Amino acid sequence: GATNPSLAFAFSSNSPPPSGGGNGGGRRRRRQNGPPKNPSKVLVQKLKQAKRPDDVFRLLDEHDGAHYNDFVIACAMGKLRRFGKSREALAVFERAKARDVVLTTYIYNAAISACGRDWKRALMFFREMRQRDVE
Image (cartoon, rainbow, N blue to C red; front, side, top):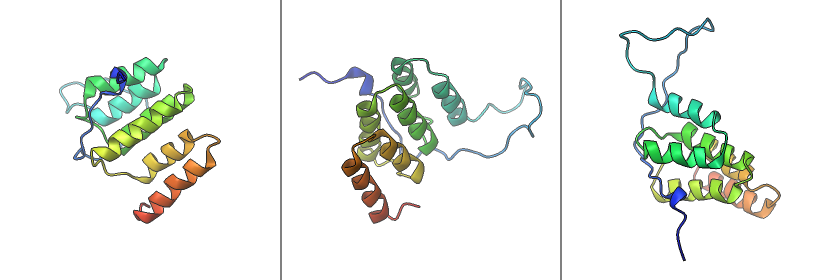
């Protein structure tokens, strides 16, 4: 059978963790001559603004794993679930797992949420998470 080209994006298991910080809650200012914004945070913001499932896949394809971390993967999975694409959200999980991405609580929670009413599958993810000592 044909594979879904929208699931052909890549993952990197050595993505840098997101950096903390912020602008202190004040007005946002445009950066001038400063260091570039954290690419993972930028990608999460773009994923949150996605209007269609295709937007999520396009963003994942464009960044081809270079700036992926647990927040990016969980955000993409959550967005796909909200679009009614739970199967695709779980495919993102499986692809991350196959590529040895460090699976965190954020990613497992997104996978459990994507299970919907399939409580047996959700329980399987929960047990796997505990077995791997994910906290």
